[in-house]
Length: 447
Image 1: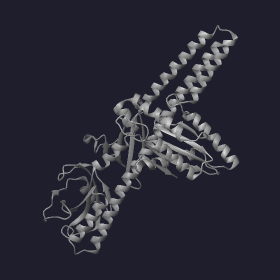
Image 2: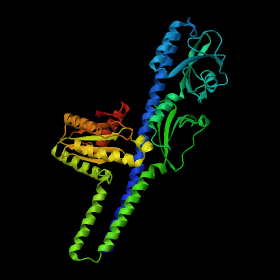
Image 3: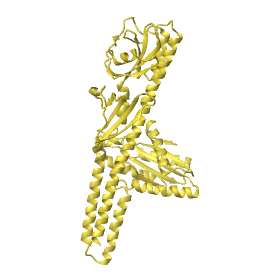
Image 4: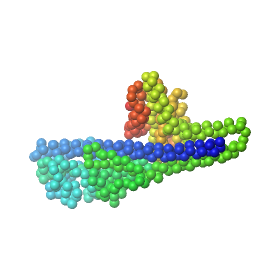
């Protein structure tokens, strides 16, 4: 009997350890996919707006052939309008057929620089009119800043000008990349379709212009195309960093299994009445399989099993229920700056506040490192919104180590009787939560 119990304990522990590793890798893969999509959308919106701007400027030049774009005040005012519409993140310039670079407006007929050796100029000399070209990032001879040259060849040269040229400073993209960085070993690349590296975070000037190769098995990665542009955003992170937390939790499980094994061996010769106490130890082991040891909430596996049961009940009786996704804002900074013990304290404190903000019939669980979820039986849109706001308020009562309150981003959906699966409900709430994050944190977004 003792050997059977010990085998059960270790089989359960090893099963949980392997399951936790798969879940950790899958969560990080999903996170990288979401981040790459978000950064690709940001990059696409910025460059798409730039493309529309230069096309409109070309249309104006076609209608005003008599105007010299270097000196015409109307063209200069229109260009300034587009610069401001792009939050002054992009400077628009011009290049003559002879390779002279001109500002808008220009102060003289003398160009600011000769760019006949630049890739974007050489590419546009043989390109078809209306071609948008993304050249290798370069250090500007005028501003001394690294920029991504985006050039557009005019269908009809005007007063010797045949290229509209935009210099997108890499710092604009690097600031956004820095905000999205998922870990210390993470690398974010902006690639051209031929594999050329146009931007990199952490910034490394020596990598710009090189060809990115396929990654080896030591890193996880995700990449997303930037709309219809010939660009791709790739994010990767070291597998060792992703598995670091899993290694700590697996060691805890092994220690726990060892303690239970020792207890079983010590109790092996006890009376029949004392054998009942072994059942209590088994119950504890089983509870550990369904309860997160840090927060006391349901584990991810147990929570989704409960969610599946609730969805089946709601579908059978034609009732609705609410679903919330909650993510702690800036939690990575706490771990990085104050250590994991302080991060664990914040997680544990927030879990208690979350439980108190929900109703007795609601079920919540920890589904990721700093992600929590809850489903609310019979909740409608108004009830879900009220409880979600209570969760935000409860989070603000948790003190951060640097001072000030904790904040969370919340996404919620209401499931109505239909064919939607638990995975689809989770995905909708997850997207709503990410919209809360992108809108500034500490808020609720309901789908």
